[in-house]
Amino acid sequence: MKCSICDSVAVAEFPSLCKSHFIEYVEKKVFETIEKYEMFPSNIPLVATSGGKDSLTTLYLVKKYFGKAKALLIDEGILGYREKTIEDLKYFCKTFDIKYDIVSFSKEFGQTLDTALSVLGEKPCSVCGVFRRNLLNKFSLGYGSIYLGHNLDDEAQAVIMNYLTNRLDLLSRLGPVTGITTDSLFSKRYKPLYFVTEKEVMLYTVLMGFRVGFIECPYANESFRAQVRTNLNLIESKKRGTKRKIIDSFLKILLELKQKVSAPAGYCKSCGDPSPNELCSKCLILERLNKKN
Ligand SMILES: [Zn+2]
Ligand SMILES: [Zn+2]
Image 1 (cartoon, rainbow, N blue to C red):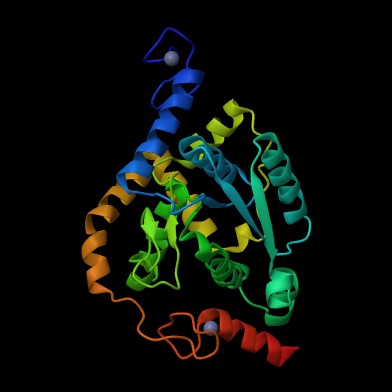
Image 2 (image 1 turned 90 degrees about the vertical axis):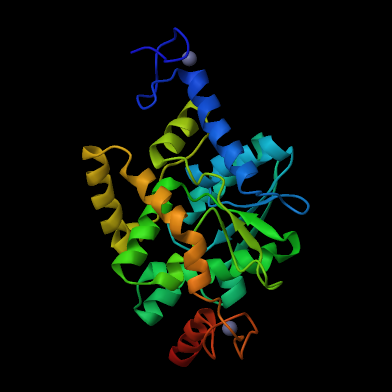
């Protein structure tokens, strides 16, 4: 199979492109997303980095576009997983001359994710998600915004998950640019890989020769998301373009959805973060942890 632009051998099928044209295609898509959705930093762009393929690609491309970037890694304390990805991140940052900060659950919350889960007996992704979002926001406030590695597959899964659970409030908080942008307690969240599929990120990472372990979080398979992902992949394999259509139709209603679902009024009485309830999700989890300890 030949590249649809030049005479070289294609490395990708849809669209069929050779190595250099595929790299160009991914980068163009990411840079156009940055421009279209005005994903501009107020000073140095801060990139949330897990050390995996999506976030390292984001880090690389944000640095390529803006000429500078800094990485922020959250260490949840997941034994046998996080150590390896921290090594990958350090190696990557050294290779591309990027500064990084590492913040940990254990230092910030007095618990690793592993110990918190053993105490709470709760679904890992819900606890992790709440803590992670909290720290990403806290440590990016000084930057005004943070770049995330969410790709098109992640977003399509999230859209479907929120439909299946009737969570229009959570659905309204998705999109290429998120965060309560009118509240100074929240930094904006940018997703430059919004239109790049998981497969495309994977191939891009390989072609660029990035050293990435491709290891998954050990908790990933326990989640509702994993079920949605498996089913979406099945549908996509039979009807190519399904994930993209999910995103396109979601973007058509996003603005009206945001107007329909109002942002949380009020603040957490414990930590002061914006929250629809007396206590925010993070403080609720911490309270339960403290009771059990
Ligand atoms: Zn070509
Ligand atoms: Zn709180």
